[in-house]
Image (cartoon, rainbow, N blue to C red; front, side, top):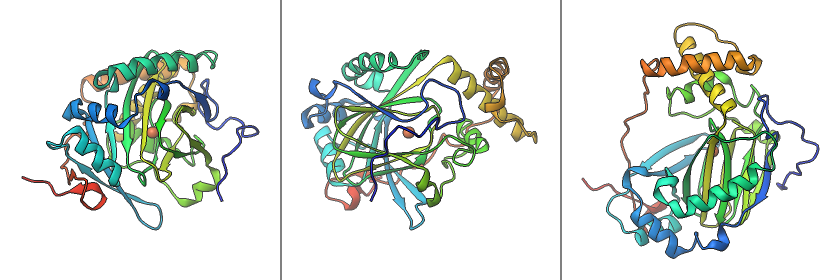
Length: 310
Ligand SMILES: [Fe+2]
């Protein structure tokens, strides 16, 4: 039986410095403002730019290893898309929520300011986000985000599993491949990690933060779910992302870069500056820009995934 972990006594759950040392819930007021009704969601889905849709269908084997199929939005109406998600097994990310649903986004930025104020020294310099609309039984595999995250939960119930940000759960060489977009694979995962998870159930009106980079996975708890995932960069996260990118380039050239958690702020800043130049000259070519779609959402189809029509 999984219980919600109490946050006392866990200590610092990451090797990286930063104002958030463990996962924590915060209240938010977005639900009361009516953003997650069927009507509001169908409207958002209908108008959202097609190029900002990610429609994912995850399958897991007995060891918890994931495979992914991706969907094309197709010509469905917002109502039809909503019905396919509610009846299927889909995970839909609407990227660039700041552009795609600005009213919700502006309200969320107000909530973010209140949460940020509870962490002394935390100052986001950029915020971006995605509106996540997902089927009752959908699950997101083990991964990390190269940013701070506040997950505003708006509808349904979901369970977050958050793991320590140490080398065992979050190897820097694997982080480099993700940051430099060298692989579509996520972090290596084994079931043995479950003993180390901080488990938290989210209800509408609750937001969750966790330490920068902390690996996590998500299970919806048999309810259609809506969340706004807001990610943010601070100067320290920019420096570290840049250092990890530079380390990826060094490693691709046969070097053996040091772990970034052993680097001073000036060292991280220097590696961030190097990363800007490396990115400009295409230091590492992204290998995941183009990939095929496998299905289109359809309410009556198995998993909500209908056949693509040519
Ligand atoms: Fe995430």
